[in-house]
Length: 183
Image 1 (tube, rainbow, N blue to C red):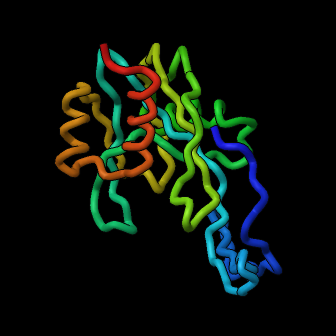
Image 2: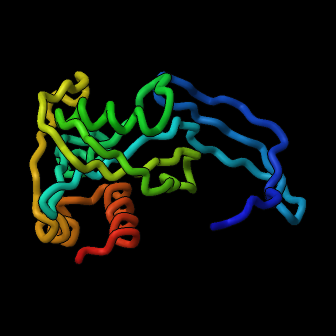
Image 3: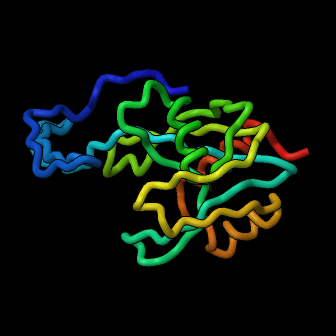
């Protein structure tokens, strides 16, 4: 665990360049340790939950078209809920919305930084077990979403062959493996 540190880069002023419902683009004028000045632009985004729904030594994944990369890709369910009371509540909501599954147990595995060079957004990783099927209630942006269960060996092969390229899903799976190695 790292301890809080004195910032080595100091913010002189900050300007909001653009904002919408999902993000704020900021441009900060900064001073580096050697005294030189510069700018640092980054996205200010709310944190989100990523859920690893596990049962029978396999995992439920969702697949959807991702506009920025112009292709469909598989990942673990994930997302944010505006005004959610907690990351735990967000995890339950996102799991149910995207997959229809409800979890008897939602275990927090940890927190990860999401693209820490361009955003302050963090993801809260949860393991969902004791799953009960139900009907998904997807948002309009998720209307093309599909879901499927994959055995652990298939998931790992999908990561290796590029069917799963979402860095958050791969990092979350690594965290799961480090905390709970397969038997």
